[in-house]
Image (cartoon, rainbow, N blue to C red; front, side, top):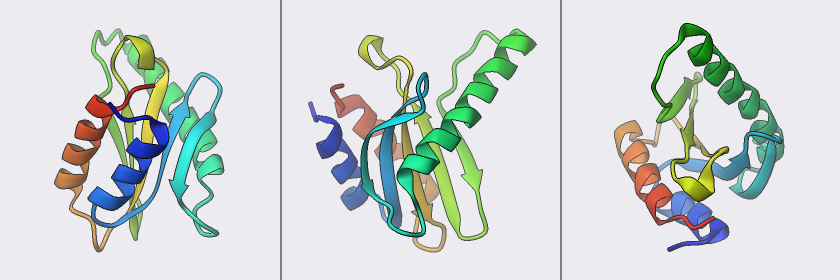
Length: 124
């Protein structure tokens, strides 16, 4: 089992094109851990903003009466992918992994696969 920092570092090193990663509590919008980012990608701002995305999708699913769960949310920009993976499991309710990728270097299918693997190994 990996702790938060180890899991986020693993995302940055094992996922081709990774620009930044964060573990986020979407009840508060607070980043519990971040790796990468930089001037062009403020991960604390991204964590708060993507919390609104997750909340909106959860609310919409409730309004539609969908009895399902969100695996991940993909936002495609001109030069980046932003991947939000909601964590499953008793101890990780209300958390998501956020990963920003360089669109030209990333393999989206492999990134999703690796993020799923990291989620399984993550101990919160």
